[in-house]
Picture 1 (tube, rainbow, N blue to C red):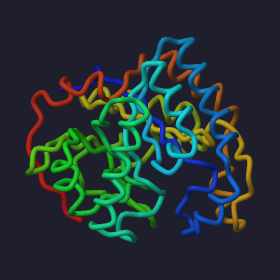
Picture 2: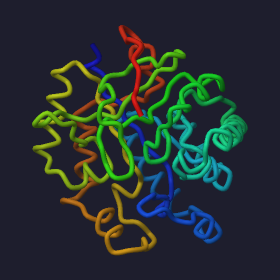
Picture 3: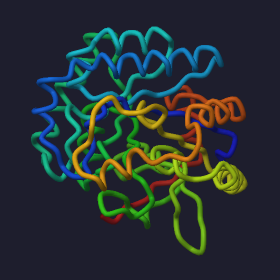
Length: 282
């Protein structure tokens, strides 16, 4: 049972890295130097340092190339550096061969900055693919965190296990936390869900997951906590990603004050204990 484990993760991407709708990231990349993102990351690091909390940071390779000092500052504070792809494109859109090339490139980028090879990966927008696990295992990674056991128009595998499990090739899969309501999986543990759900719902979801003996896996982006510095295209997109209930930063701080958090790497061996091999249907 893993109900004692509380894991904090961040997806480090810039304000325009969304897939609702699919954007031409290159147009934004030419203009953006990621200085606003780095400022937001510094605020996150300050909050975590004050509370002696460690987290896993899934970082885009392209951003690491342009802002290596940001990656280094995260690593120097004792946090885990993990892969989030080179650019924020869905795996189904880039395919297996391009993914292999870009992942190899990312490993070299992060190894060059930190001197360490990342252990884990999370796909942009949880866009897990059938071939993903074997590719990561062959590249020497130990875990994946790309499965979200919900169904949305963009991502999610609602029938996937809610607990950590090994895929057939021995890679550990760590699904994002969801809770059960009326026979369905409901997301709550970060992102837009954390922004729009009242604290009472978040609390009840946390308690349910812990009663079931499952680990809590929270995820955040810098712009979940603060306003985005740029303007997203389309009213629906702006509405969905800018909508929030109350002061999200204060709610986040209260969360980590209440629940002691850790990085994935620091509890990886505990996560592997008693875990079974399971299949995932895509």
